[in-house]
Amino acid sequence: EAQVTQNPRYLITVTGKKLTVTCSQNMNHEYMSWYRQDPGLGLRQIYYSMNVEVTDKGDVPEGYKVSRKEKRNFPLILESPSPNQTSLYFCASSLEGNSNQPQHFGDGTRLSIL
Amino acid sequence: AQTVTQSQPEMSVQEAETVTLSCTYDTSENNYYLFWYKQPPSRQMILVIRQEAYKQQNATENRFSVNFQKAAKSFSLKISDSQLGDTAMYFCAFTQPWMGGNKLVFGAGTILRVKS
Image (cartoon, rainbow over all chains, first blue to last red; front, side, top):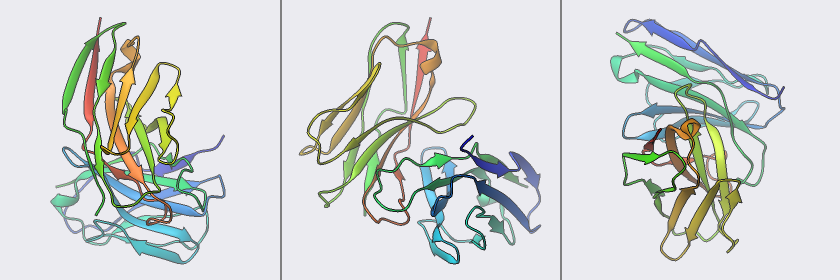
């Protein structure tokens, strides 16, 4: 089954404690993105990757890091989380090329930073 | 910068009736794509319908259809014969070729409640 898998689905942690949210897709997609969803703001892109070792900033990259060492995986790293990073996070993937390709979303990670 | 505006934070509709959700967007480009996503309480992001800007014909998917007005930069979603399972947050989204890894620009969302 084609899917994007995020882990964990829920995480409560404290300020400053490094954490990683994993994302894996099994569709051999070139493009992957991370979004955060906040009330009244919709979803906003944090970082994206167009292939292995090719990553770039989205609209709200401050406080986040990513890596793309393998095509299927695109982890989101919070080196020193702060309360303003409390949010719902989504990983998405799509085929390279025309942007009418449908995005496949993971089921989301609810992150709470105390 | 491209923006998407959904002016209705919340809406409600009786089961079996029709409801229209509004969306406007801003871009100077001529080639782009528009989408409506549904997010039920399970938090999944489900693609409802999509529209290519170069197509004049409005997209339809079963009970879901859009009214795409390119000159007015308007992209509304009509849900016919509303069902309880349509209760969800609905997001309008925009993208254009080669924009940030197929980046989607989302509106703030509209919460739709279908009442029995």
